[in-house]
Every structure is written in structure tokens, then in C-alpha cells.
Amino acid sequence: MSWGGFKKAVNRASTQVMLKSGHVEQTVDREFENEERRFRTLEQSSEKLQKSARGYLDALRAMTSAQVRIAETIDLFYGDSGIRDNVSKHYLAAVKELDVDTVKELDEPYRETVLDPITRFCSYFGDINEAIKKRNHRLLDYDRLRHKTLKLVDKPSKDPAKLPAAERDEKVAQDRYDELNDQLSAEIPQLIDFRVPYLDPSFEALVKIQMKYCTDSYNRLAEVQQFMDPQIRENYATGQIDSHIENTLMQMRELQIVSL
Image 1: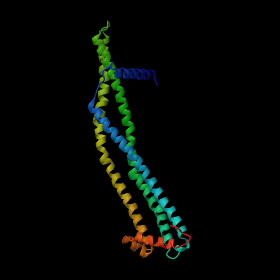
Image 2: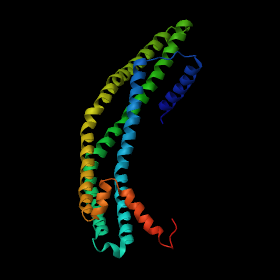
Image 3: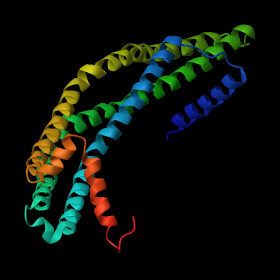
Image 4: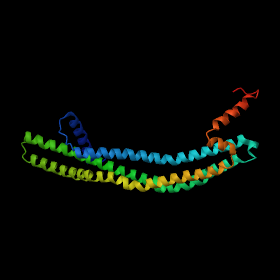
């Protein structure tokens, strides 16, 4: 930090203390404060959306991987009993195709149409926060110089040149503050309004990607269903699956080595 920058930092720190103690009158801009609150809400919501969008692919991969592990275990569980209709083999093949083909096909389109645009939108917040920080610094400078001018008005200096110089410095500080404050007050609402048209295409892409995954999942698992016991399918369709399970349990209870 340069010497000039160091002095500004010290002056601003002193001004903050004096503002808190009431020794310096603080400039209040309700309009800007309202827009900044709206921006903070947008920032928090967007970063939450970014985090959730990033986690969606991870969750999808985790789910399909879990399906494969379940299918592998079921196939081992069925063993020779599944050779007759190969239903466990068909189920394993279906979930593997979902894991290998469908999810990998969705990865690149999802990143390009959903995750990357949301991440790019969030990347603008750093510049805006930096501008708000600079605006606050300029406000501190203006309040400090305005206080200095008021002190010279209340207690005139023996040097008549001090008051005009203080007024000039105050005017320069006010102009610098007003310029950035007006810019932010005008552009932050525009940014907030841009959120919907900007995210509309990503929202549409998200729905289509989810629909493709759900459709592929349904079609692949529907093919497996035809290899299952027709009576089990009938019991499930008619709501009698509980009776089927209970009948099987009753048969197990008849075994002397089983106590259920």
C-alpha cells in the first residue's frame, strides 16, 4: 500500500469511529440502502442456486452408482435362481446403461446450458461488491470533509484560505461519491431485473435434461419389467403385493429353522 493509500485508510478508520460515536453526521441514502438489500438477496439466492446446481450432477452420479451396486448385489443374491428368466441380469444391464450412457450424455449439455451460465452470473458479484466498497469509501471521505468544513464555519480559522480550500475538497469528494452512488443506484436494479431473462434458457434446459433422464430411466426399467413374474406384477397392480409377501412369510415360518 502506498503512503497516500495508507493515509486514506487511517482517515477512513477514524471517520468510522467518529460516525459511530456521533461526532460526525452520517450521510443516509435510503434508496441505495434498499437496492443494496435487494442485491444481497439476489447474491445469496444465486450462490445457493449455483451450489445446488453443482450438486445435482454429483447426486445423479451417486444415485446411478448406487443403483448399479444394488443391481450387482441382487444378481448375486438371486444366483442360480435367476438363471431361468435372467431378470436380475436384465436389471443390472439396464442400470449400468443408465450409469454409463445416460448420465455421461447429460454431463456436457448440463454444464454448458445450466451450470456454466449460473456460475458466470455469480462471477459478476465480485465486481459489484468492489464497486459498493469503493462507494462506501468515497462516502466516508465526503462525510469527513463535510465535517471539516462545518467545523471551520462554526469556528473560523485565522487563515482565511482554509475554509474555501475545505469547501473545494468537500465538493470534489461529494462529486466523486455522487457519481458512483448514482451509477450503482441505477444499475443494481437493472441487474436484478436481468436475472429472469438471463436464467430462463438455463431453467428450460434443466427441465429438458431432467425429463430426458427420467424418460430414459422409465424406458429402460420398463423393459426389465417384462421379465418379472407376471403374478407379482398382477399383485402389485391390484394392490395385493402385501398378501403375496405375507404368504411367502407364512411358508418361511413353517420351516423349523426360521422363527419370524
